[in-house]
Length: 107
Image 1 (cartoon, rainbow, N blue to C red):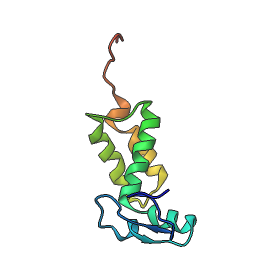
Image 2: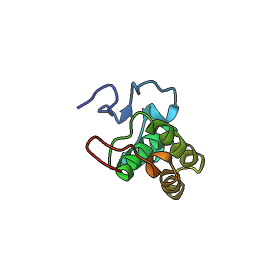
Image 3: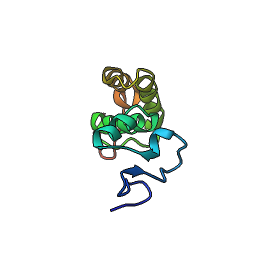
């Protein structure tokens, strides 16, 4: 199955949405080469940050969490994808340390 953001039958990424990053468009040899090519990109590291934040927070980050998402993604990207940096940044984020009291909850 192919589509605008799926690999084509010739082993090629095409029509990557809103990206001029050469790592996100073009041919690749196998799944390992694809992973090695995509992993160091800021777009993939930001997605990785989103998934780790979702798991750490126990909810999908939204609204006011977006500042914490950026605060967590920036050092992770700057460290070249060092997972330790991401974990520290997430637990130091406002979204992780503070949360709004939900409907029906008490302090």
